[in-house]
Image: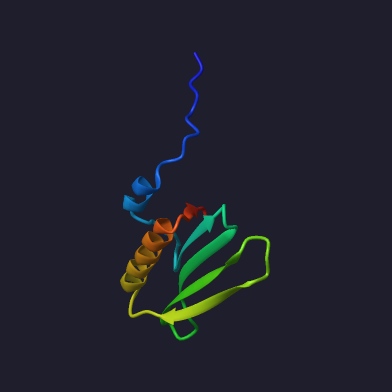
Length: 102
């Protein structure tokens, strides 16, 4: 007997209630979202700068395009940065983006 997996995507309501879990690799935490219909991406990384301070690197733009932007925001702590990533993720999901592997 063969078991087939459903290809149905979860609803946006279910996705917006799911907490954002950034990929963490030692000193770096990051998330990436895409909006396939609008061909847009948004990514965020929480990293230490050269002075040891925590910074949030936000990047956005068009998929397949060189247009976009970036912003670097200083955060007080690693925990504060993770809270900001969660808030950004919630907003992205509300706007129709889907979380992808960073």
